[in-house]
Image 1 (tube, one colour):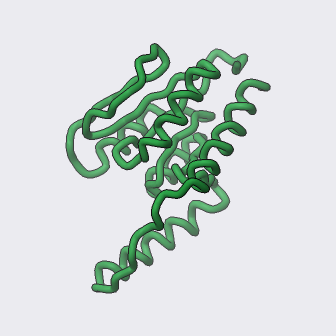
Image 2 (tube, rainbow, N blue to C red):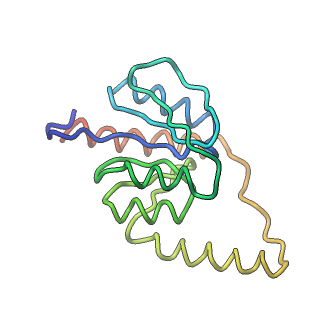
Length: 157
């Protein structure tokens, strides 16, 4: 475990997090003894564990995101596909992993924000841009592998 006074935590933007990813997170939290908190606008089914909790926030635009930003600390891992949220927690020194296993970093977040804004402009002008591809077994494995690498670093620090 982390030797410092503060032990890193896992935070999940749970409203859009696939159930399969939540299950991976539940098992990982219990396996390594790390706190896992899911934040959502609606109730989320949890595995009974003293390490796993949920914070249900009120309805509204970015309410869950704002709560994550308020609570996250440097070194924590946030699981989200929300690019503006990722940018905010990266600024606080947290790490970000999407449910598809992609790392959001200081090096790539600006380009992702610009692409998001560009796509939003296209959609608002009536261009059909489609949505993300279906969540696949490859995404599932990529996420699990990335989470294992993060947790292995915590255990060795």
